[in-house]
Length: 154
Length: 434
Image 1 (cartoon, rainbow over the protein chains, first blue to last red):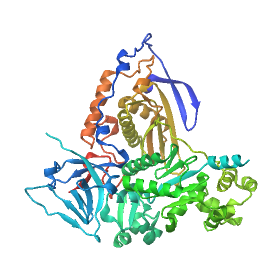
Image 2: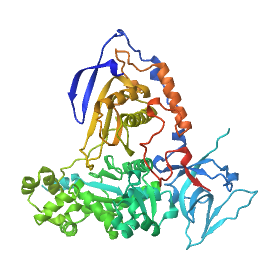
Image 3: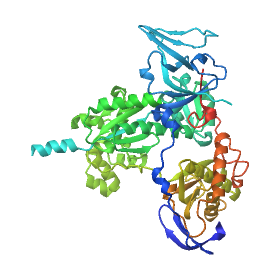
Image 4: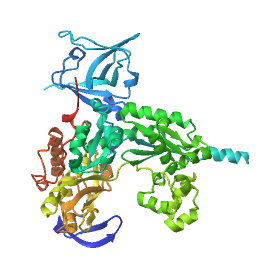
């Protein structure tokens, strides 16, 4: 590169100097580009982000632990990724799948709310994990609502 | 006349400043509910000294700010302090999320710093206290970040209102000067030391103190002309802003970032051309990759290298830019050009603390012009190579494929012993749920 460039002009410009390079050697004259006529008909490609993420600043991607199988019946398998919307947490409804903070740990569970009863349910018939109950003095902290699970196949 | 007055009232400029409480610590806490209620400190580059702390750390460890970590390590750990290296990737991501939520609340926004956003509220006639609470709740729910909001008739006043909202609990995070009478505002300004004013640093404050100006109120009612003669036009502007006149405008952002930048401080100071070349090549390739990710081509490149202005040795900052004959997105061409610039600014014997590469005047591919000199893009071999390199990098984040100029051992990379995962930027470091 350096030997291609010889300097014919130096300009003092803030914040730094700008060098305008001058090229010696052969010039390919007559080069031009035609804009494709198809350009007018270009359509937008399918955009996965638009499909999966409605609220970008509030959307976080988390990963299910290798040995976490409590939600397999809901299609949430170990090591799969979850797309979580945090902004929906204050409005989480019964039957939403949520990421909750329990004893400083992040859990993914089905939210169940009915009258005064608030519970987090697992969905794994084979293992039948017990539900986690919340009382008035032990409030449930919801971190986000799970919108999608990404499962990849080999 | 009455119409004139009501119009003036309707059209009076109003500004809001929102800022994140203890930004760096709050970003870490957003992903670590288990450390809630504990003092948290964040260390500077290379784990040098404490640069940020949460409220609890401030209360118990006030004197630790800016102290070298190795000096206070033992005592801080005894107090159960949680320590983090600075995770700039994470903070930048969270900062963008914060700004994205803020942009919902005014058509005119200025991102002033990583944790501060100005909104122009002129013409938005709502109860600002309620509006501020809505903004706070939205930011908190969306990102997990706690913020405070201040409203005032100038940017300087909105910053002061924000300061009150942050330091005085009874505001509940939102302080609106525009809903107060002049006397009420003055009563507050009388309690604030003059160095809390935007643009008044400790040195300027010391000079003002000597003249008997201790409180913000005293500065507000100083004679602007005398201030200009004594301190210059900037402080005069500040005095007028304190009186509700608008002298500092909103600086709107460009719709599309025209520059792509990569820079970093060195883990170990670099002085040889070889070390510096490796770092510059690394930054050139990072910037090029980022730019290609946005589908852009650069019309020029800018390189800088500097030691620290706080060094004993003479401060040196070399910087130079050059335009490409035609826009390019090729890592090879960008590295070659950046290294050519580096040779021009390199000064032996300087222990460089920081260097970086910025790609200038970027254009999307449809705005591309070809040149007459054969440098032109569209070289199919080069584009295919770039594509393969980017894809390998995405698949293997440890980055096995590099341009040879980047070097193998990167001694100048930062030391970050207490680094949290890059939750928002790496598929291998996502938050784990059970």
